[in-house]
Structures are given as structure tokens and as C-alpha cells.
Image (cartoon, rainbow, N blue to C red; front, side):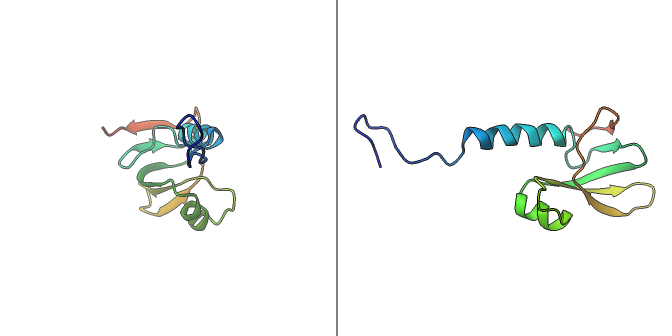
Amino acid sequence: MENRIGRSTASPTTTQADEALQRVVTSYIGPRKPGVVYYDGPRLVEVRRIIANQSEARRVLRRRSAQYAIEVVDLNTGTPYYTGAIWTGSDRVLKAVA
């Protein structure tokens, strides 16, 4: 639907709040992307995939408030698992990917 000056009056699909939340989520994920190896304190892990879909992240983490999930594998034990932990100043990238 258009108003009198030719602009659409339909609500945008992405609101400012959605964009702000996406920026926050991106900062929480940090430099993690598939292939990155990092040390998160007790473990050395490699990122397998990032799940940005909220419903899928909530399903795999079993948390109603999850905004994202990161599938990683513990390089010492070979155990894969999902995390929703935020990137902190104590996390260290050991192998970055382009």
C-alpha cells in the first residue's frame, strides 16, 4: 500500500530493534566462524558452524532465550557440542580463517 507521496506504508520487515539486536548478537559471537580455532579458558576448540536462526539455536541449546548457537569440537577429546557463550576478553583465537 502506498501513501499520497508514493511511499510504502507497509511496515518494514526489519525494525531498528531487530538491527540493534543483530549487532549485539554479532558482538557476542565475536571472531568465531567455521574453521576458527580458539582457546576459551578450559578448552581448545574449533568452530564447526554458527547457527543464527533463533528457533534452531533454542532447540539445540534447549534454552528459550537463545539468540544463536555455535557448534564446536573440543580438540583434546574430539567431542562436539553446542555453546551459546559470548565472546569475552579471555578468549583467544589461535587459528583464524579468511
